[in-house]
Image (cartoon, rainbow, N blue to C red; front, side, top):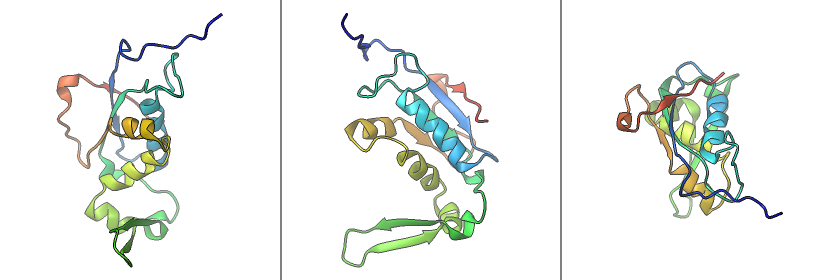
Amino acid sequence: MPTFVPPVKSMPVTWHVIDANGKVLGRVATDAAKLLQGKHKAVYTPYLDTGDHVVILNVAKVKLTGRKEEQKIYQRHSGYPGGLREDRAKIVRAAKPERMMEEAVRGMLPKSKLGDAMFRKLKVYAGDKHPHTAQSPTVFEVA
């Protein structure tokens, strides 16, 4: 009996909206990563992109547990010698709050071309408005 491989082209792709207002960063990121990978579908295949598009709103109001606001460090590198830059979560939230959610979700996706394709389907916004209303996204509740 041959193994069933779902045809990716004919799969329906839906859009989900997650409101991160008052939710814990990691909880929202895990649910978003599952939706992007397609693990919520019965036809999930690890080597195919069966996931959906995800829009995350209000990431500026996401919660960090414990003392992560003062202790968690985000790193980036300019590419030049000595170009490592480190910022605390409090500073990253003030400057670019979308970066916190993007890095959390990206770390939960596969480290490959397939993971890059999944990550491109993630849209993150600091406020409660988004330009994807034409796709008629469904609201996804995070526990």
